[in-house]
Length: 256
Image 1 (cartoon, rainbow, N blue to C red):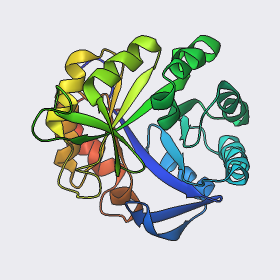
Image 2: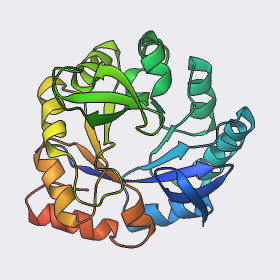
Image 3: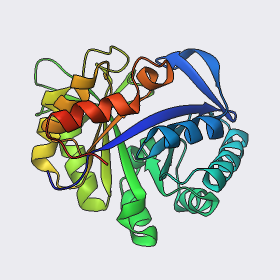
Image 4: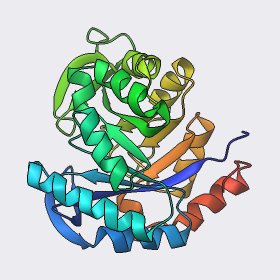
């Protein structure tokens, strides 16, 4: 591998505070996002991702302020996702200090949004988030993986591998591939799904969902992930970023 594999903690932000929960239920306060981002920066995170779980427009304004405060204090690249529906939303977050912006549901509803963002800002600012689950029987999708919305609760009938390939063609700079089956299980990333998408896309691929041990991050990188993302194992202190990087380094994987 010629490019260092990135390690990315993900923070769910609700009304300006980081929350912890399982499948977005039983959320509880976990602290100030700026402080936590600063802490992860100090621990060696290569990037930090904020996911805005606030539904209201007022919550989005709060998120812009969180991004502004973070960008003033933290120098690690910052990706912000959640509720991004237009190029103006992207513009607002970039002006506040975000380096990249994540898009999910709005791109499913209107795929041309991907091209609009890439044309206006460059594809390097656009991360397409794909929440995918396995489907049995092979009748729904050819690959056996389906794009979902609403935290994995709602199927779309869209083939996840085909969608990742199409989105990359439209201008997505990277794909954040989140396994809804593995998410929160700490049993490891969905390596088959990673490999299937890696075979079809050349843009950077971020593995998400299922991390529970250092060897899981190693396996994801060997399956083709350019970056590995996790939330609860870092927030709850089960793993440190240094442990993950050490395991990957020991496996011969280049890290920063």
